[in-house]
Length: 137
Image 1 (cartoon, one colour):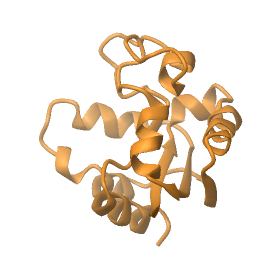
Image 2 (cartoon, one colour; image 1 turned 90 degrees about the horizontal axis):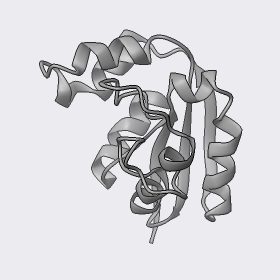
Image 3 (cartoon, helix red, strand yellow; image 1 turned 180 degrees about the vertical axis):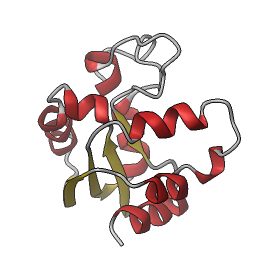
C-alpha cells in the first residue's frame, strides 16, 4: 500500500549541508520525493506542527531551534514509507541511534538538545496527512 509522509530536514541538517545526503538515502531506499521545498518556518506553522507538545518543558526550546534557520520539507511516497523512514532515521537520540541510520551516522550529541537530531518524520497516516497540510497547504 502506497503511503505519503512528511519529512523535515531540521535547521542543524540544513546548516551542516546534509540535505542532499539525507534525500539520497530516502531515494536509495526506494521512496519517491513527491514535493520538496526549503523555507524558513513560521511560528504559526511550528505551533500547528508541534501542538501536541505545547506546555511540555522541551516545547519552547524546540520552537526556538526550529526557527533558528531554514528547513527542508518533503513529501515522500512509497510502500510503508512512514514506518520505513522512521527506521531509516533512527532513534531520536543520535548517540544511541544505530549505525546505518541517518541519526546514527550523521547525528551529533548535543547534550540536552535532543531536538537537534537532523530530521522529523510523521509517525502515523493521520499525522502525515495533518503535517503535509501544514507544510504544503
